[in-house]
Image (cartoon, rainbow, N blue to C red; front, side, top):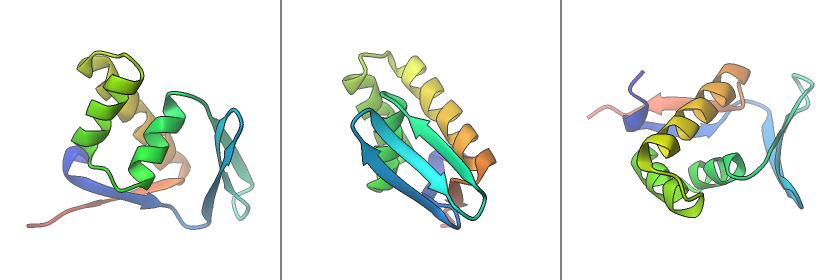
Length: 95
């Protein structure tokens, strides 16, 4: 899957809230709850604001003091976890 050209949005029934320790994803229909802590919560927040894959990597590298390779690995692992659980859905752009 070419994740660098995809756009991302919440999966069906997914909601999220900001809490003192991070962000919590939840889906009442699927009876699922997933707490996210820093820096993974930042990854979710950046995608929820519509940032591109490359921009998220650059921002995560800066705010979490990671090199670009480690930031990309964090982003890829997060996206994989969230899409497998159905919290996040990708749409690959055509054009």
